[in-house]
Length: 246
Image (cartoon, rainbow, N blue to C red):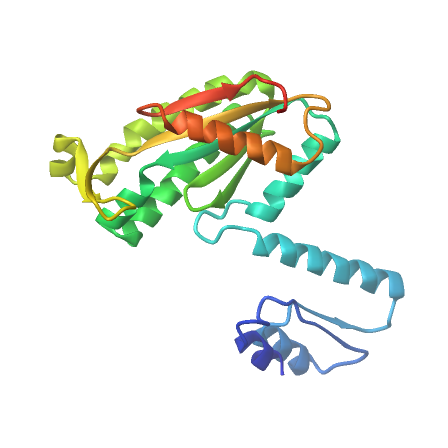
C-alpha cells in the first residue's frame, strides 16, 4: 500500500506514518524501504506520538519548500521569514535579486546551461551573505529571483560584493565568440531578433523599520516596483527604496 501511494504523483508528497503496537522487524524495514516517513510502534503515548507526528508534518512542509535546483528555502519559508520580521518589527534590509535578460540566455544556450546560471547565482548570493553576515537569510523565490535578509548596516557591502562576484564569474558561462562580441543574438518575447548583452544582476533593497509594513504583500509590491526601476538601468546595479510605504 505504501509503495502504491508513493508511486501516485498527486499523493507522493503526503507523509506516511504507520503505527503497530508490536510489529515484526521485517515489517518496519519494508515500510521504510517502501517510502514511509515514520513507523511508530510500542505503547500509544498520546503526547509523544502527537509531537512526533507534528514534527514529521513540519519537516515535510519545509522540505517541499526547498528549491530542488539550488537547495535554498522556497516561497513558503521566505514568506514565513518575512512575516516574522514584520510582526517583530525587526530593523533589517530585504534584498530582491533578479537576473537581467536571463530568458534570452536560456533560449540561446538551452535549459541545461540556464540552470547552471541559476545555481551559480544562488551560490554567489549565499556565499556572500553568509561570509559577511552569519545571521543572514537567503531564499530562492523561483526562476532567477532571489531574496536575502540582512541587518541594515550590511546590505550595501553585501550588494556590492554580489554584483562584483557575479560580473566576474558570469563571463565564464559564455562562449569566447559571444564574449568577444559582447552580446548574443536571439528572439525576444515578441518573436523579433534582438541583441542581448552579457547577463547582469539587479538588486532591489527595502529597509524595513518598525510598523512600515502590516503584511508580506505590501513589502512584495514595493520590492516588485523597485526591481522594475532597478532593471531599467544598464549593467549590474542595486537600488535602495528609501520612501515610506505607499
